[in-house]
Image 1: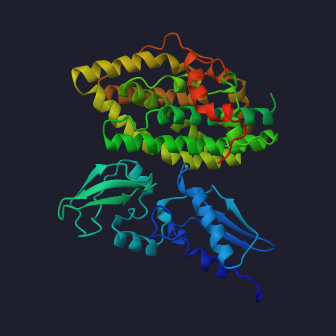
Image 2: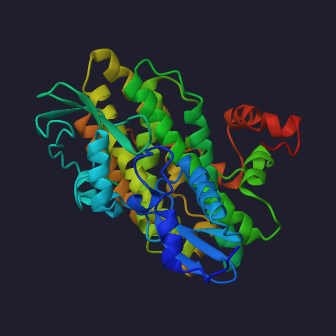
Image 3: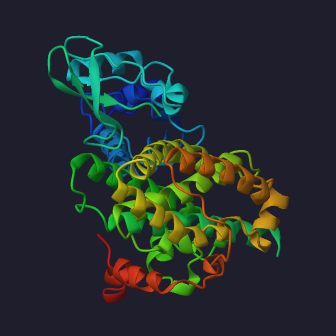
Length: 163
Length: 252
């Protein structure tokens, strides 16, 4: 095995391929939950949980350790960082495009606060882009999604809630 | 009481409230008659249990005796729990569950908003995370209470019954004791007097919209914060702790 000095950039590149277990079309980099990577005697990956009770948190942490182990990196330590708290605003532009293509309407831009204060803006259907949509349920298959229906193309779709 | 003891006691109370309420809601999983409420309840329960885990992990570190979040949740007796009496009340009917959540979360949200600015850094961090979640809960639960109160004759009568029945447990939320006072002074913590004023206003406006009468503040039950609980808590934690009690140290 050739040992070259490991760079932070390289680690980030590998981590960009780790998928979110609940929305596998997104990588954890798209999701914006990688806070920092430090490469020293050990590799420290700082991650932030999305929701307090998100059952994916442990799975994601294990996936990070596994992904780096596959690249021959041992001695990985995961550090959970709580502050500042994760917000849907951190989902990358690329992540939003991927979500839409996957059939999940991405969270409205920078709207986390407004959304919480009862701002019920129209959410565009990820399939036909019509804004003639209806909330079916504020809740969905995972804690981070709500269920919608498009009145134009009549398809149901999920919306990534703003927090 | 010194600063460190107050911090530990305060964090444990936060954890106990979150866990016991989360567990109460878990009892309702798969019991809702329609999918939307089923998911709402399960999602909310998960938020509470997630919050409890963060508070317990921190409490274990503060205590410094090597107790984990699991030890604190599963190996303490009833009288070691410091949650509010309101939290542990049985679920009752849907109106009871919703009313309990509106009364508690109206308080908890104000408490978390204040904690975000306290000087106990880790508590402030957890509070910042939890605050967003509780805001989402409260919005949903408030809409339900309004719908029930301002609904049919029967839903109105039942919701009024829930409010009247649970009101006596709300005094404890604001009864500052030594832990609250030391935490407030040493860590720039919540001022329960101010929180009570805002809670009264917020709850009064929800009840008015729900066409429900706000009960008078008469005799208030208390004791949860000192570990003197109603008979309901024991049954509940007996079920919750069953596995660890029967198979001590069992792990996945």
